[in-house]
Image (tube, rainbow, N blue to C red; front, top):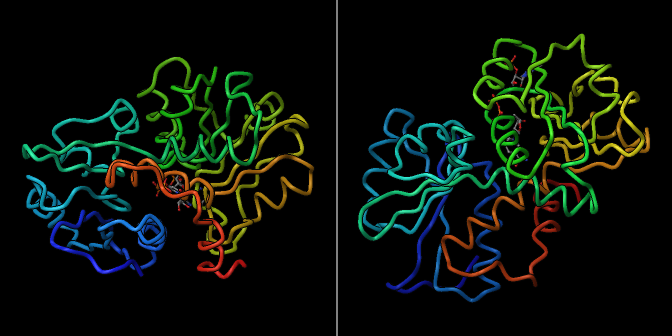
Length: 285
Ligand code: NAP
């Protein structure tokens, strides 16, 4: 726990339904304590039909900001007055900042979290060098597409169980994003530089996507957004093939960094090993 707070404390939090499994309080609280800040970071679980009223009530600086998670990310964007390019492109916000003038600013740090995880666990990987293949077309995939395009990916292919959702996503982004069906995967994987599992397959220890990873080039990077377990079946399969892998926990930890900076006006203290903390919390260490 962080130290005692005063009446001048900066308050931020995370909002979702359910919220009790969120690791954000653990991460931010550890940073607050290490930085010795007069601050707090707390979980909120508004009733699903009261989200807009809850956010509206925070206008004018009742708290500094809010991370937003499932199922509120799209509604968070809609509730804001202004939004970053990333949030607009992603069609969702995971960060709301309550300005003193009463306005709400939306941002999305999931994409930067993905790019940060790539930089940390696949150093030297060049996003601009080859197409990216994303499995899944939900909110996480959409956020990833936005960040990958802004980072220079030459093409992003979307493959999804429900093809219409992949097509809808591709249509929202223009020519550099294409939808393909599962039958096309072998051809797509053969020249891809990065494969991302953005489906919920593998969550809780089940089988991951059945994509033929052995067809990827030897230098390809394989990423999985699932982080419970830390090494889902999809990543273990990639590892066994000798591919470099990037895990979902690193993405989660990296998306928290710009949020902390926006709330508390400083970078998280480097002295805290939040990955070790999260691994202990997940029972992985
Ligand atoms: P979502 O909007 O509900 O989308 C779920 C996706 O998974 C859809 O593409 C869905 O396909 C697909 N899917 C679900 N069950 C499937 C099955 N049995 N077979 C094939 N495809 C299946 O969820 P989301 O918010 O995008 O999240 C996706 C995953 O990313 C979750 O595991 C989430 O925990 C993870 N995530 C991680 C981070 C992080 O920081 N590491 C951040 C965000 C999300 P259909 O369209 O056909 O239903």
